[in-house]
Image 1 (cartoon, rainbow, N blue to C red):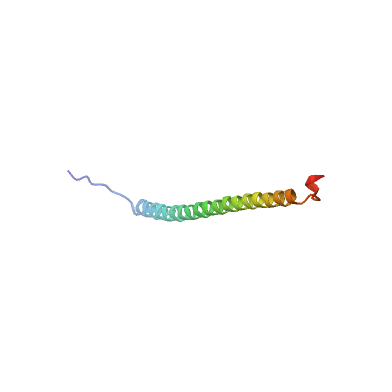
Image 2 (image 1 turned 90 degrees about the horizontal axis):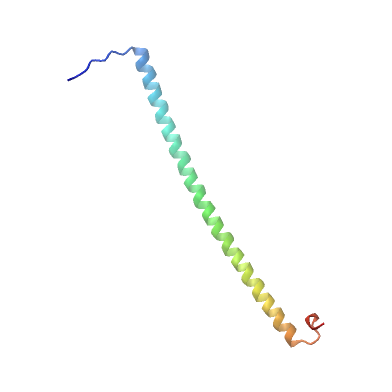
Length: 82
């Protein structure tokens, strides 16, 4: 059964303004959410690059230490023999 509702023009305009503001807030929310996703992906890539760089540095230090160790073991005048 239909119900009749009476509403004033002022109330209707207020309702329409609220609905428009709500839509605007929803769009802004989606924009911020998209920006957050982008920043999260950028952070993850930066973290991966950092870990990769750290691993490369560690490997190079180990390799340099090994080379230095081998060089010292073949040279009696090396400071490691002192």
